[in-house]
Image (cartoon, rainbow, N blue to C red; front, side, top):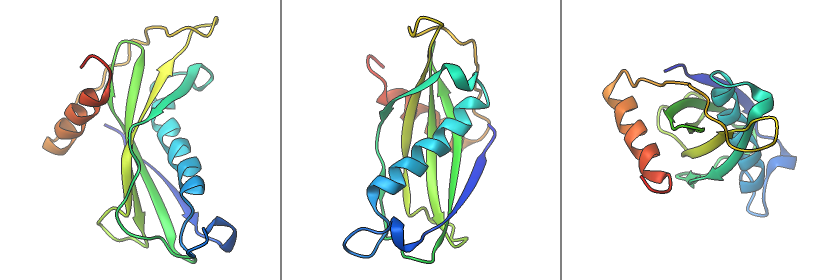
Length: 140
């Protein structure tokens, strides 16, 4: 599955009252990163975010850090695609933040519509991510 990367420099205006990256700003970048992965498979104008399944902060992100938001679509349902996003700091290998987001494909009337996108996990890690993503969806 294709991985997409976007980079952000954490500036003063991105910080919370503790001097670390504000969760609200992180959410904005997180959703944008997941959207890019989903839009690789679906028409961007038909995609909406329906749920952030989790955005777990594992370590603080500081002013001046360069973050890499790495995203990949890991599970496709009939009308949805779930992406996994991890945030790496300054080329570290351990994620500072990670989680999943589900997007739904809509028709011209704004109703969920089948998309016919098929995602096939290639590695053990992708298989694990796909199973986790599937378990996050209602009725799975």
